[in-house]
Image 1 (cartoon, rainbow, N blue to C red):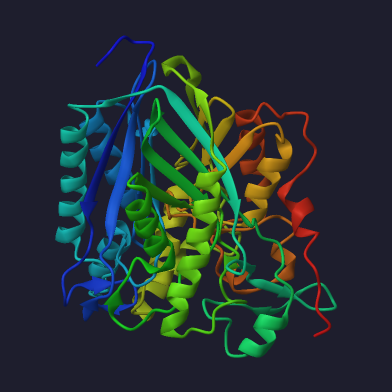
Image 2 (cartoon, rainbow, N blue to C red):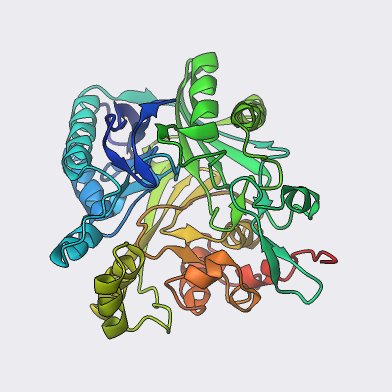
Length: 447
């Protein structure tokens, strides 16, 4: 370690690929197309360390997310609320939710999305990698901020008809009617990929990228894959020689459905398009001097309101009658809400950039609204932290319908809970734009 005013950084990465025969989110592993990883950075600013990490899993839910935070915090010598742990949300990958599995097993139902021993061992290995990495951190002299446009990847999942409600849902590969899915308007998305990088003079030490879309090209075939975002990340790291962590933004209602026909070859097409955006952002990066005092971390704890249709007694009955996880996962979430569980929202400020870390499958309007609230800063957002809340739409999105709205576990009032902390993070209390304002901008089709 150098003097306390200096900024330092350590990087870590471990394999997170399950074995053949292990359970994953939608079946079991028959083979591996692309290995999965958990990777991140540890920052040493003035004050306690900060951990920023992402894993190629569909998600870490409820107690799983807390277990990750605690283990990485202990390894880095910091507090759990200074750990931003996120999933990239690939679907042919594990999902860890020990609370839901325990609840189902109590009813004699086995439903696993990951081998629990493997998941806990992955956490242990990641924590050990953090412990090893922080013994020899690198001094950071500059921070880099860049952006690049990604074309023909993202599209909004809610396609609105003439009456303004959802007439079609674009899933991973556009749904059953790909001709319509591909011809319908792109909808509300964030087409920009943003990069935050750390440098020792002219040498880049690490790059963090942020882009919002569901990251599936195809799945349910038993072949594990980090899919097109992971492929793009890995190739960009190989080409630049710079350690690379990719975070999925507020992508709850964003998918590649307009541009993805579900063919195997299209996975690499999408990967190349995303990599082109990464390359543009890297080329456009502007470096600024930085020290430990230029890095700030903020925390806001919120109580996210449950959906009004979540009835504890009915959910318990559903767990017994339905040998699947949705009622159980909803019940775990309802119990968390009833106990007053607070979820920390966090924000990293580095020079002219702010990175907001959010839970669940957040709608992209929150990300776009945050950027409009503070146009003088580069605002990035990582979602898919604590997966417990699931889909979180805007107040205006709930009456429109669609898959995400129909399965949402939170109340439409969630916008009133999440928006004020975002404003405070960005010193934008006087801003009037809301996520619902952006929902209102969605185009309609003649269907």
